[in-house]
Length: 106
Image (cartoon, rainbow, N blue to C red; front, side, top):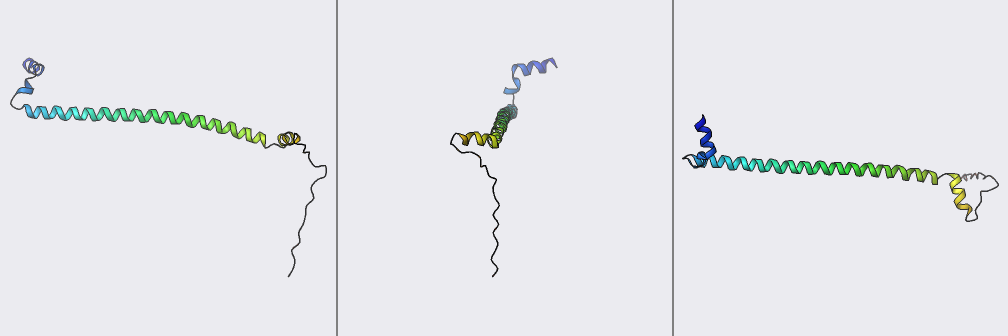
């Protein structure tokens, strides 16, 4: 067993008579390792992109909530009265009257 380990450490398996078989295996495993590393990097890149997009979604959602509350405040009657008061418009003293239209019978 000691001789087998020493032969491996010296690289005899690379120069022996069945070396081409060993070389093809080494090249194949190197290729698979490269593909695996590239795949892992690609997956990490996608995970980081998803995390960044989730943060952007949270930020946009909070902006939406803020804007919606601002719009709701602007739609209040008191806010509208304040803004049109500057233009000289005041609420009507008389309540509105309902107009009924009767259809003509032919």
